[in-house]
Image (cartoon, rainbow, N blue to C red; front, side):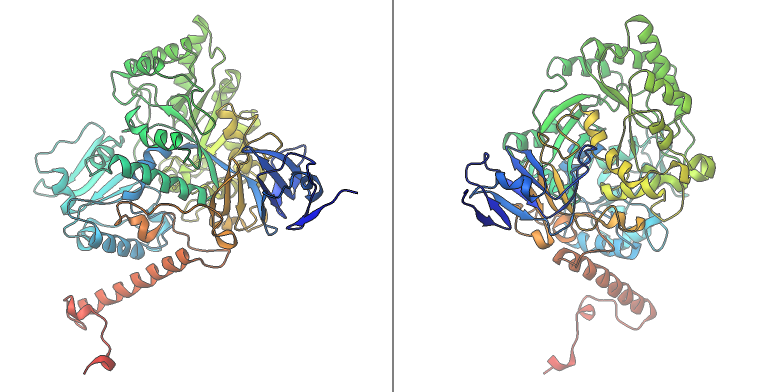
Length: 634
């Protein structure tokens, strides 16, 4: 008879198998594996799943040093994978940014801004950079320049709204040097008053270059602080169940200098997400020089399971790129676009580099496919290298067939959740109902991965995107998608897990929970498959495991993850407000959530005090605003 002993309800069988380092049991595991869709427990060793099934299947892997975590009958899913996230750039700046993601009212947002301005040191800015829109606010509007001036009369404030506009207060205008004589670059507008002075409003018409170039003038974190900021950002993503991301490069993200933070974290074994990155030429006119230089430095696949190069893009050349500012007409394609794209594609194919390509409009995609056809006629396309389009809001059915025939794939984002109202106003409800045409993409048999395009447009919260895929509504609750263009929850989750793994060539190790696959797991605060559709966006992870390592733990699992270093600088908005601001919680409030409730109460109190001052019921001075209690008067 084999001697056994009980460990958290599982019998230990001495020397039966090589012991697991971690076991998660008593969970409702959705594996994503068609051969075994559900399980109750899994065992991990060496960062990979060694067994999955019920307690009996896991028991042989229990040893005296095995760490066993009871999932408390919660829903367990494969870790989420955002297929289009500007995670590297976002990490460099995260601790500098005041996030309005999920904030329910403009009143609360302005109160946060006022409080942050008061603690921000001289010479630093308050910046709100993406992840929100006026539709999410109870007031259903954007802040005004006057409101920013009132909230922060002396501290520069920069507020970015989607790809459409930026709002600067007086102090920010002075800091960036905008005057009556300032000239905006092509595709941008500096709005002026009757005397020609800048008002503080910048517009993308339709290019966002003016907005981003202005933001780039702000103070930056030191190299050491950028590493800390990236750690905090990855921790925030882990909080939402993300374990992988495909970085899309982006403007003002130079290689290799702006990749230093993730490289250092990878070297030190401190990454808590797997990142496959792309290289994005930064300067119009020297794109081929950049690509040639990078081809001589690195190759796709270089790196390891935590940080690896996936190819070029999302721009290969600047001229073929379109802009996703739906308040403006679709930009016309320059004549040189085809030849410049062709040169870049030929160079990449000759050197075995895959690529991703930004394309919002169907006209852009059709023109790009024509270029690929020309390359195919001469030397073949795609010659075995992986490639895919990003965005594709108005791609045609004919182009989808061509993409499938050429072996391409697609990565779509929930930008319509934030920009859908502007799209509908310009192109009509019928066009908005299948932008992007998700069901037609899937019906073509294409790999369609999902993501956010965070951090400057949509929020990085993947549950907003998953809700949008299932529900088809804007952030303000307006129905945009037709029922025929929505997907079921299982399909949406596959787009956020297995499909992303296909885009990075990792479908044999990632995206599902199966023996031999990476132990990337999220234990959820609510059951994704049964909560009302409108509550999907309120889910978060209570326990996130990457490579068998607990990287985030909250609620009943609090204390199981290593502590995160304090934020630096200490005045960082993240220290006071955190990141994504939840407005409804299916689980009991934590300390952070209680603090967020206090923020809203304080905002209401401050608004009431300002009203009393305006009405003459209270003096407008600092001393009078202090709490007064007659019981303490001697």
